Length: 72
Image (tube, rainbow, N blue to C red; front, top):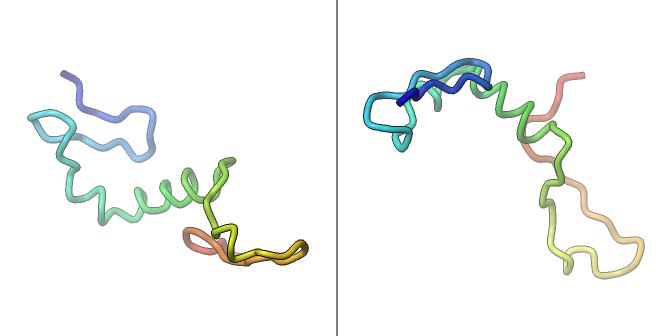
């Protein structure tokens, strides 16, 4: 069984025994962190930001951010 993630950057080698155990370096590698920030938080996807009761009146709004703020 091939346990290499090939469609991601950086490529991670999974330990023998399947893909249910994430390699420790996936949690501490700066390149993995950067890729997650880009793909998850800065991609073209809707993100949950607040509850409806936090903006109860028309014209109310809630500001926040997810992930790490982008550098200017």
